[in-house]
Length: 413
Image: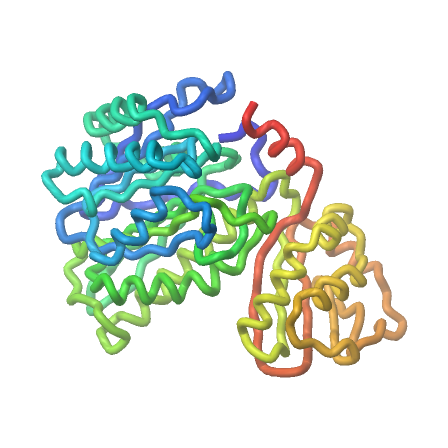
């Protein structure tokens, strides 16, 4: 974790334990961390009770890691017994040696739990192109298996790389007369762009949920949360979001929306995903401002999302926000380059509730002062009305500062 904390950081919430989930961390020593972090833990081991359901969404980057390739196949079976997360080495673009390292971890944990290798999920994050050291992985896993249980905040810190603060979220819902709990952690700061899933995120619940329905709910939540954020337009080779349901709450199995409490559980899961997604943006590398972009009047929701992301990914827009410059012409440019249906003469753009342009023209008597004042704050809102349909979407991003350059120029040093 970085020493310089993002000005947009949120304090780590009080998060209850989840029945059927045991948390442990250890130090594998995958990389030479900064001098102040030499003793930091970088391997997370989470043990799950038998019968735990699992669902997942993964990066669509074609140069993905073996962890992602294996995970895609593993979630099809729908059950999990353990999760291992390695920080400091992404193990991506490492060929058969990277695959062997993952399978070694899976076998080591499977032998310990007396389960199948397919029930052991592995994620890795960090530098690309360096095979995960098998000896360090073996020793790290062995240490984690013997470690004392730890807190959610310990886990959130351990899975981080360039993150500046630990990220977690929790929620509860009533399902069939039972109170169910969700607790989740996430890491992500750079190489963040929406493409199925972004960063590494893990959601745990004591609810009883049928695996296929859990997958449906996670995929749906992903479309309006993780797939609506961007820091730098770069989609990682390792990005994964997994949801685990232990079934320990005692509710009747949720297998469709007709089940009691299914809507409440879906809403809680969506809230968790949105909170986690926004936390990642707030820790964007070098970020000083959190930007929410709402697009209305598009031909479809998906078209609205693409327009919003075109604006969110524009370096010109992001640097203008960083410089607190109310240059709405840059938003016009980004809408126009999105490749989505739009009519220049119907387009309206506003900042912080103040319209700068309406129906293709600057607002008569436009006063830039309230917009300039809005841009001086940490939370910036941009509203775009295309006025050609009923589609709408909201996306989130951050500004682009020199801090992003500094962090990534020094990433391997």
